[in-house]
Image (cartoon, rainbow, N blue to C red; front, side):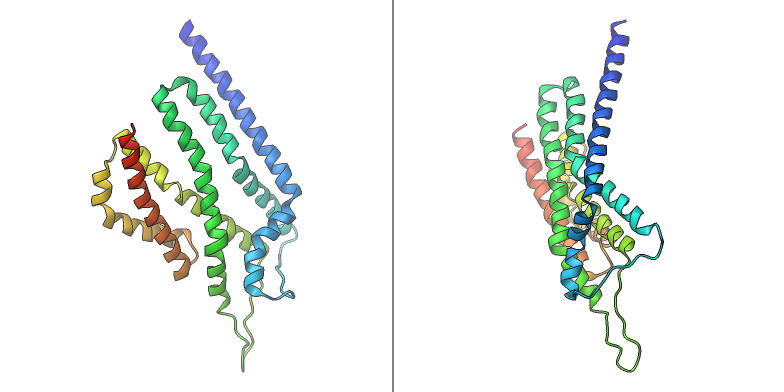
Length: 244
């Protein structure tokens, strides 16, 4: 009977945590939708600076396209900003059932995950996007004896690309957490990570090609960053093992 009561209590607490997480997400969505134009201006700023022309514009070709783009943008921002709060609810649910050592391990992970995600987004916004946009805009031409080629970005496509990049880099920056967890759990060893550097480089190059636009600058940028994170993971895992 005690076991049934305990299971029921866990289910009740899980429901409560899920409800709170949904409330956080919904509140973040409402706020994000209210400030959707400001968020849009922030995300489009790297392109505006790369273009350097106040007469340029972004277009939409479907009647409902701009509205649904703002909705998608608000959902993206809501996920971005509510992620730490949802992670906190996850920790509060799991912590009572964990040993003291496990709680000490889980808390830093849940704190580091959103920080690394935000760091990945910042790297995209401040370093990768300006370089990539300059590369793509280099294909514009005055036309000479033919018609000129000029970029008129479609708002939904541009924001989808930006959100894809930010989420992709944010997830890629979780690499140290994943590798350190694998080492801590005994699934892999530090020596294994050292010996598999060549394979890791190949995987990193492939991941960089998938997560970035098809330009060499952003691909090399992400590959270098991911490899640096791989090496930092080895150092972090060694430190974690010594202090276990």
